[in-house]
Image (cartoon, rainbow over all chains, first blue to last red; front, side):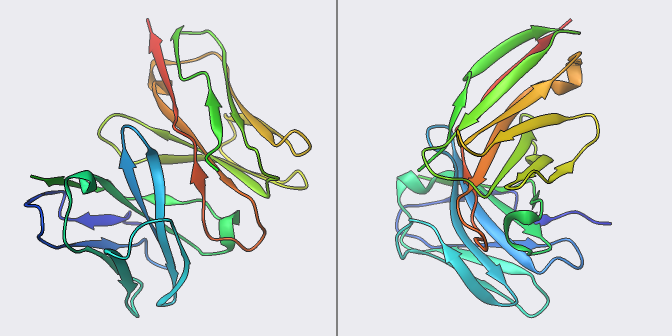
Length: 114
Length: 111
């Protein structure tokens, strides 16, 4: 079974620009979560989608948004990029039975904002 | 609130044992454990649920003390492949879809 695929692997953007990251979950997984990973803060929850509905959102500004498509693929968008947005963005898929199900992480997208 | 992991880092020789702890200030519904190697994705190790159910790899053992809101991961007879950063993720409510992760414990196993 193919794992979680995230594209692109690396991105370099300039302050003020916007960026879209993509995540393809494991086949059959309907839940997709997004996390921001930084050395100082660790893994921070961004949001979770299930069947195209956002079920939970973390404590991030409105510049961070996401969506999920009918095939469970998900995208997240960050507008008006700031230097502090530089991080590894991880997507994880699961069967979606709440937190009873393990998360399967992708390799992440490394975003650098200059 | 972010759970607190201890120790922050530990160095072991092959064959030695280690315990990684995860403490929360909130009542817990579930605790997840993941291991992340440098440059790789976090990999699922175990879920411990309120009520005693556990899901995970047979070679990994962990405990969940609901009253103390703590979980511990036990690594026995460590191998070089155990090296990595271990994260616990906690959930404080049934039906929640969000894990709050600790800052991680860096484990290094040396020959």
